[in-house]
Image 1 (cartoon, rainbow, N blue to C red):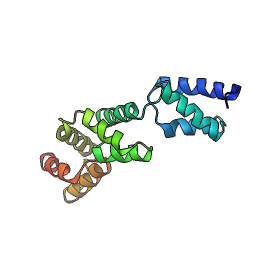
Image 2: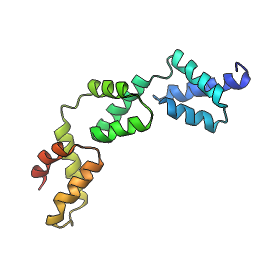
Image 3: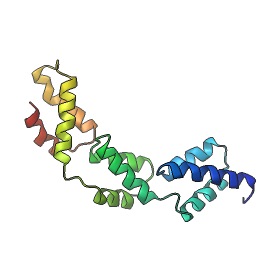
Image 4: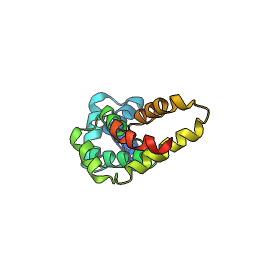
Length: 153
């Protein structure tokens, strides 16, 4: 296991993880693409964790922050994406606690206004349903959407 292939995979994986925070699943996929055997891949991941190149908690915090602030995703979509990436529920909850969602309603309003500007020809009777559907698809909760809908009309 501690052969040349392992060391090369470890070095490549360290560079891959140093660029930005990565999930364990992301690293596994990359190692598979590099044709690293499964046992070596798990050993590389264990070593990356031991050397602090890989941290599920850091990854979750960076993901939540970035996808909320930059992509303007809602909490539901962010949580689903993290779960799909194999992040534990504990890390997902901790990342949500670390993130400042004090401007959540304002974010929903900006996303809704952006949608409305891009869809000016939507008939008035369809705006509410289409906007609601769009916002729900972006991961915002139904009760949060209701408060913003009235402001956009």
